[in-house]
Amino acid sequence: MKKALLLVLLLKIGNNTCPAQPAADTITWQQTVVISNEPIPAGADSTWGFYGHYGSEYARLLHLSDGTWLAGYTVSTNKGYREDSTGGLHLQISKSSDGGKHWTVFSSIEDAGRDLDNAQLIQLKDGSILLACRSVRWQESYRLPVYKSTDGGKSWQYLSTIDSNEGKPGELGHPDKGAYEPHLYLLDDGRLSVMYANEKHVSETPSYSQIIAQKTSDNGGKTWGKENWVAYEEGHNTSRPGMPVWTKMQNGNYIIVYEICGPEKCNIYYKKSTDGISWPAGLGTRIQDQLGGPFILSLPNGNLLVTSNSSNISLSKDFGLHWQTINAAFNHSLWPAMYVFGKGEIGVVSAQKRPEGGNSVLLKFGTFK
Image 1 (cartoon, one colour):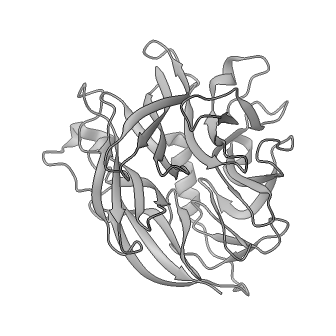
Image 2 (cartoon, helix red, strand yellow):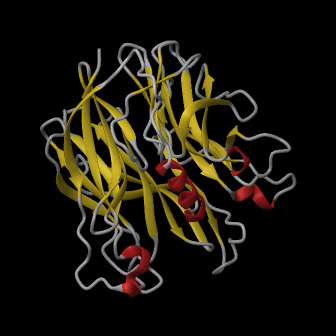
């Protein structure tokens, strides 16, 4: 999502209110913990701009097979790559060994001279961990790299690139022609698959401002197959499906949620698939009361929860046929995500504004029946 769209979205969120009538199903929200509160860098001044008061944003968690939790998120500790050839946003990984109640910085991933963001983690059956993200030099270089850890997230090595687009400075702008927001998932047949937002087709005929693309790997992310189009529609070249998150439901089918910016104003839509590869045509079905940056969670009881930058939480008890809005974890969310922490317990992680500027990453726990 571009900065201009984000500004409009945040203004809209600020006017958002929860439904007047309480829903029949609620979550009891309890403890809030800090995952990351990256301080303003020493010496930061007006020349640092966007990078000076960034803090921490866009967190995604992973529950490892040994019970450990990892959190990957974006931080800024420098002036940015335009002012510092080795600068840029980078990723930090924190670790919790007590069910998410306390977190310590564990490792980091940097790509000198580039902005890293949109981290997402997955553990393979052999115990290794993959982290996918975006790595950009705006309007000239866009990459979706995958990093691998074989020591529980302590160290990381570059593994592969899901997709990329390279050009001269400024060549890939007006409009941008990038790739963003990868989300990895394991299919039933053991293959690794990824969804991401793709602008590379905007210069083609017909033109698509942005689509949701999918690629699949037969070898644990070392190489990636051909691109499969998941959310797009002929004649809607200004619609911008993006921010995909997908999961398998308890009935065996898959479901993906995503925003559609452009004429659809960043409202949230979804689609379902029997195999995670074949998806119905069109732009999907809207979920009410959700706006920008969605995340979906399948609960052990089969219910589905969806949240987004609207802060609202939507509940479905019939695998997405119907949705009701229930009580939110945060008043103002930014890039939230949800996870099951135990029997009847979930956590919502979100970037939250702080008085000194920028954001911290908080995790709020809740119980449900």
